[in-house]
Image 1: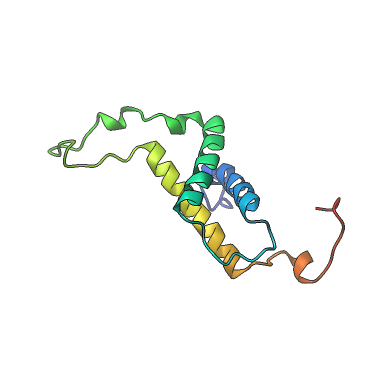
Image 2 (image 1 turned 180 degrees about the vertical axis):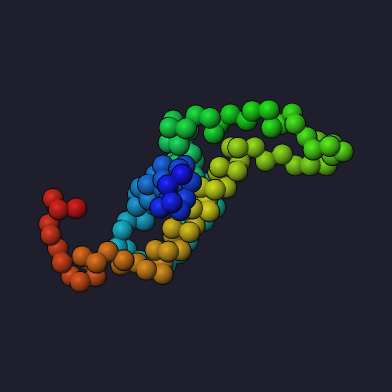
Amino acid sequence: MDSNNQYPELYYGVYPKVQDCINKYYPPYVPIYQMPDNEQMDTMVEEIYKECIEEYPEINQDSKERRIMARGISPQQRPFYGRRRIFRDLLSIIIIGELLRRRRYPYYDYRYRRGYDYGPGYY
């Protein structure tokens, strides 16, 4: 593993999809005053999840995890959190983190902050 990588490899594949989805619902350089409600959040998570499943199909498959239980704990006592549910929760956390970051620093791009406009072909 490279010492410069601070995040797992999966994060680098998922984060651009999260940014694209957020940009679709909340355009860049427009301040976000209100967080999405549960329905909007579910819609964004579902969109990103479908894109990620195409690229990483193994996420959608729960292997033997369901059959292997800890000793002495019956399936009724222990809730099962499979890959799908954990991955969706991870997507929600990344979306919320990105939205909160954009609320704190809405104009983080130095070109916009300093008033430079290089035209539509530059970006």
